[in-house]
Image: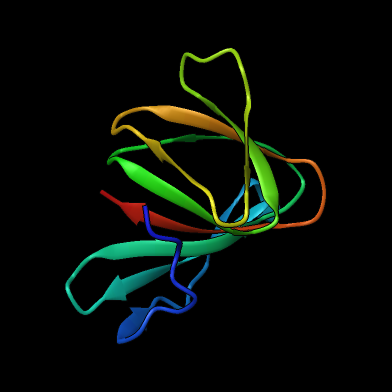
Length: 108
């Protein structure tokens, strides 16, 4: 898999932030010229549970986190330059121990 892009060209950015968990996770929707939708955001220290409607690929742009997929017992570490995918109609837990984890989420 190719690394996450350093920038997205020719996009529209939704200025209204998506704020989750009292500001623990903040993202903005990005609409590509092709019509594809992505979100870009930051995750503050903490543990958060997300559900998915569509399949997603989460690319870690900066920082680090650990992820536990739905039904899994173990946490898997991810650092800048790595990614993970989540199936549609599923869930995952994501944990950031310190600092910020920055991400790009693509809907598959």
